[in-house]
Image 1: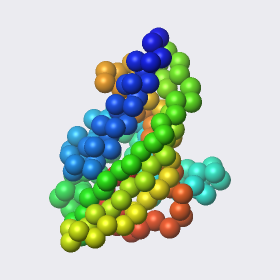
Image 2 (image 1 turned 135 degrees about the vertical axis):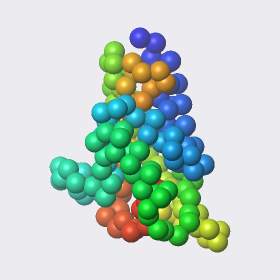
Image 3 (image 1 turned 120 degrees about the vertical axis):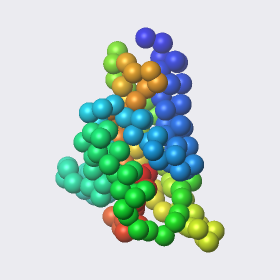
Length: 157
């Protein structure tokens, strides 16, 4: 296995993921995941305590599609968008089919009136399927540094 090619593929996956969310292409967001996936947004305290609950949880790509459908058609919220800054990206382990990856992130929230604030900071803990082309997430844990989570968490991080 070409480790350099794996690293480039993982970096491209993570960059494309952030761009998809930041540019409001949320209908494409589920395509970054394998069919049977896990997506969880949780606090650092809950993660370190081994508590499996989260603010947002999905156990399949279908659940991610449902989330986007609800966001677009049913949820009522003040219009806003994010801008992600991600890095450094560390590949913790690679085998023939999977990579375990961690990266730090911040997400700035931009409201419809132009007001900006630091919305979230934390780590992504990822398991990436290396057999799919392009690579896809098997699991993406979004571990927030703060236990305080804004009630306006409707767009994925």
